[in-house]
Image (cartoon, rainbow, N blue to C red; front, side, top):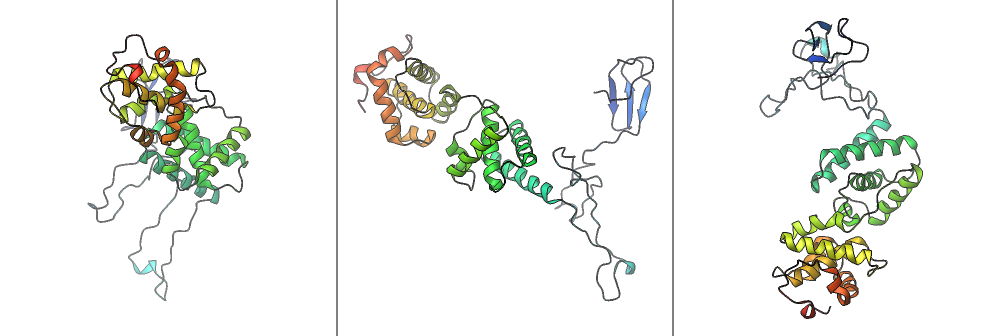
Length: 310
């Protein structure tokens, strides 16, 4: 249900219009007056299952419009000719499909496909894909990253989109589903932020805690303790210069070792994407003040004095 600019009921100008796509009418929601007809539905006419239709595409209107492209997504495809008038004297087809996609739109389409493929591999929702697509379109129009690989720009846009949507992923997670090095994606990330005045919130330990603990199948009370340990360690400046990911990993290790659901540094390192020694270094900084970091209601299975020393 929506109104359309320039079309309104003459008796109820402020009334919402109901769009009946089956009949192609726009109807006043107050009195039922048809105020507009021949409304065009830009969606696909019906779904096609090529294996069931012998390769024949019955959809006459094509896919839904992509507002990020120019007019390249509106095209006409000439079907194969069957009559004699369809072929010249030497047997060649008289009518051929000519490519109508501009180079800029082809670049966008390839980038959107890359972003979609990467997102599918790490189970990102459609909202993040759309934001990454919009960001790539803005970068492409700005022409400030000429000479950089489009795949690297697409990966950087996806990383920024995740940060902006509040579900950040680590660089290593993006690199794992991309064909570009971490160094090149990092360069594009910094260039995009600088050239387009785009901002991202600083990542915190809490951004990764629930996902890491969920992947490790840790109990709720262990996750709560790890969250408290990481937050207090940062607030008390116990782990200066350490990345939030390594602090979160060390906090999970400490909380799990104090519970009956213990995890090794190797298990946590594999999930967090950091090295064992990185977790160990942060853990050693936190251990002397462990009593201050645990929540007061935490039920210890292993007392603090019996926790691993490294």
